[in-house]
Amino acid sequence: MARLERGLPVLGGGAVLRQNPLTRPNKTKKSPAPRFHAATKAIRDGLREAYGLFLAAFRDAAEQLKAGDRSARFPLGSFPPGLPFVRTLPAMPPYAATVANRSSDSSKLTSASVVNRTGPIFKG
Image (cartoon, rainbow, N blue to C red; front, side, top):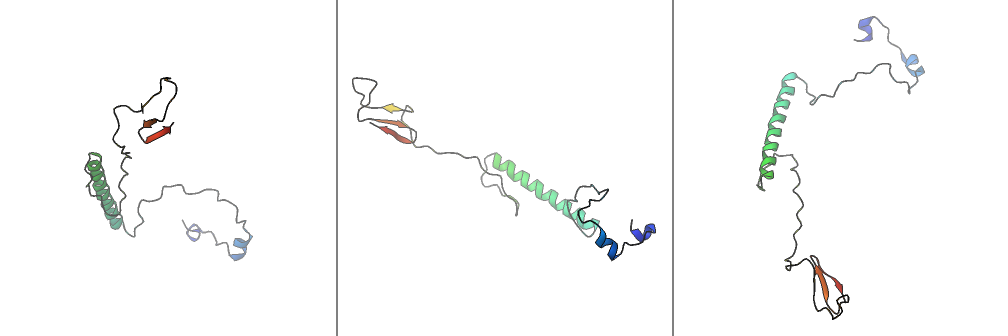
């Protein structure tokens, strides 16, 4: 309710300047911000409906992508969810690590290579 409607006079310039700018109000209005700011209820309802359609189209496309369809079409202006990271590895020998040309002493390596999934890691 406005001050004049309640019969209270306006403060005036001097009273406003005498106020401490760091003082907090005694009571604040705590309400969530509206999802859409619109001039009329009809426009707000239209925006809510359009957002619902956008959300439904996004969820349908996300389900298609999750099912493996990489050509799923997302609504304009949306950001599709990221795909999982898949690292491709080169063709592997039957064993993860192989040692070739061991000397008679099995604890030493000669000029052989120990190979893992990324290639040679040790050359003796």
